[in-house]
Length: 338
Image 1 (cartoon, rainbow, N blue to C red):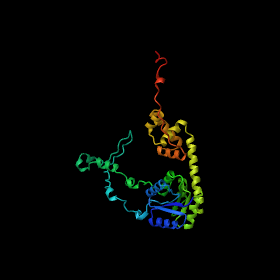
Image 2 (cartoon, rainbow, N blue to C red):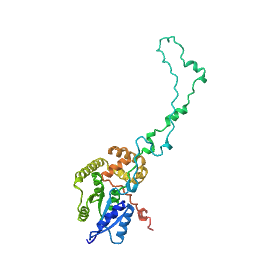
Image 3 (spheres, helix red, strand yellow):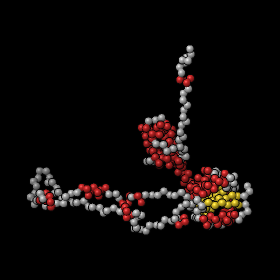
Image 4 (cartoon, rainbow, N blue to C red):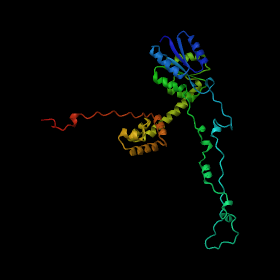
């Protein structure tokens, strides 16, 4: 093979430059460095265009995550207001006025007992002494939103990390070997990395000799994992396989037409688009979609698509446009004869 070309992708500049310098000390290793996902993809494209493609890429598992270069988010103190709380703080609720109590009606057929008039009765003739009922205050109290259902408590989707970049790089450069550099051994993330196409997982606290051994091993089509991770990774892969098997079993319960509908849902088509593609009425498509959700045991299109992806269902491809009928096929026999 000659010289081994390695690309280090890490947004900690000191670490990336130090690692590149250490690897360059090897006589058969040539190293480049990139500090972001965009820079790594540009370096790979440029090297491939110049005919000097990289053989191995070392990717930081936490690339672009919070806490890099002083960008960590400070934890909120217990009991403190969330951000912009003063701007969103609502006025205190106004209690509804109490209505006068009404005495229970006597049973049928019995004479009402002699009792003093109700204290609320004289007030009916003097409305100026009774506090008027203000329905707008009650309506304001009812329509006031709950403070714990506001926007600051919505879950935030996780930011892309180095494993996300790894999957994208492997799609664009299938022959490239990928090794993940991690600060901690995480079986779940290691299984994700293997599924994305990684062939090695090395802790950043490992020695340079260990990293070089993994680099040379992956070039021999070997997969390298720390021994402490093997049990956890196997468990994660087994669980993922079990989920995939269950999803496949659910998809197999669908009829051929419902599988067509599911593939259209995976492609992101709406009800009208599915009806136009399959030459069905929107009402029929709606019925099929409801059947699909029921058989898969889910309650939304997104959940159905997730089950379909775990089962390996591919999106529906658009149908090829049919050729217009020829003149000869539309002309009656003998019409062109004299």
